[in-house]
Amino acid sequence: MSEERDVSEYSFEEALKELERIVGRLESGEAELQEAIDLYERGDRLRRQCAARLDAAQARIEAIRTDAAGNPQGTAPFDAG
Image 1 (cartoon, rainbow, N blue to C red):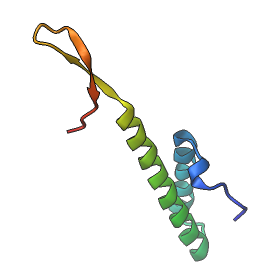
Image 2 (image 1 turned 60 degrees about the horizontal axis):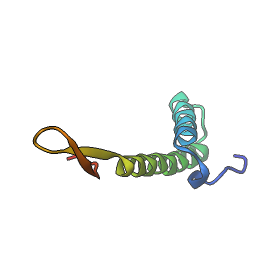
Image 3 (image 1 turned 60 degrees about the vertical axis):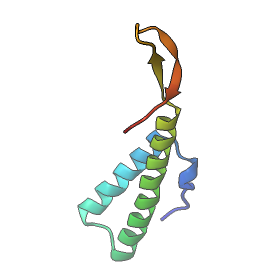
């Protein structure tokens, strides 16, 4: 494999696209054993990067709080509950 960027440098979209490419390569069955292992490990790092980016985005979402009359009273952190 050629020298690859560190997964922490990828945007969510770049990481997802690279992960899809890796999954396609693994599913094709054409990769030699060591390449398949390397691809799987890189794919796992990319998966974790995507999850971290989604978690960070979710933490930034805020819900608007309203009073009994429905008037906006401020914001509260997103609760995925």
